[in-house]
Length: 241
Image 1 (cartoon, one colour):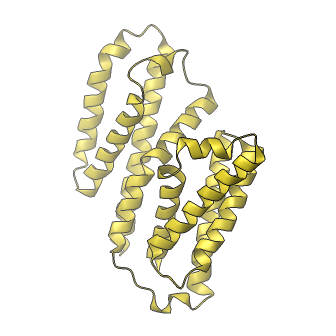
Image 2: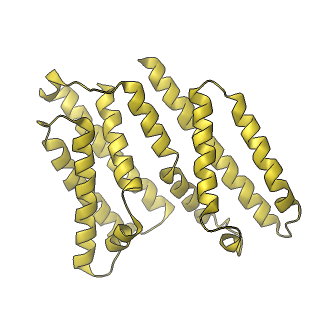
Image 3: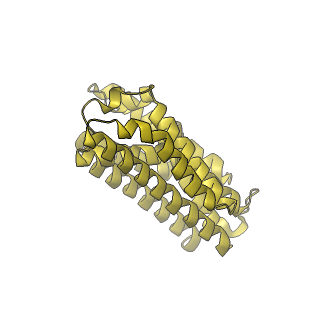
C-alpha cells in the first residue's frame, strides 16, 4: 500500500515547511528552554495531527502518536546540536523519512491495521500533491543552504531586487516545470529557461561582479534540476499504478 507512504510523506512536508511559521521556528531555537520545548511540542503536534488527517484511518492512532514522539526527539537533537546548516538539514530530513518508512513498513508487514484500509482519493492525487509541495519551500531551503554551504553568495546579493521576489520566482518556475511534465509539455521547460535567460540577460551582462552571474546561474540550474527530477520521478511512480 504505497499510497499510505505517500500520504505520510505529504503530511510531513506540509507540517515541516508549510505550517511551520517563522514565529514557531524562532520558538524552537529560543535560548529559553521552556519556550523551546513549547515550540517543539506545538510543531510535533501539528505533524501528528496532519498525519492522522491525511491517512484518515481513525483506528491508526499509534501512527500520529509515534510521529509526535520521534519528531520531537529528532528536532530537539537538531536544535540542540545541529543548528541551521546544510548537513544538519539533510540529516534531520533523512531521520524523519526513516521514521516514516519504518512506520509504514510496520503497518504493512507487521500488523493487521491495514486489512480494511481504503483511501477516498486516488494514488495519483497524493503523488502530484506531494510533488507540488516538495518543489516549494523544501526545495528553496535546500538551495539556500547549499549555496551558503559552498560560500557562493556574493556580497550584497540579498540586498538587490524586491523583498522575497527571488523566492517567489523560484516557486513559480518550479511549479511550471512539473506542470509541463505532468501535462506532457516538456518542451515548455526549454521555453521557460530561455525566457528567464532573456529577462536576466541585461542584469547579468552589466554585472560588474562575476560572482553575481555565477550565483544566479547556479541557483537557476539547481532549481530546474530538482524540479525536473521530482516531476519525472512522480510521473514514473504514477505509471507504476
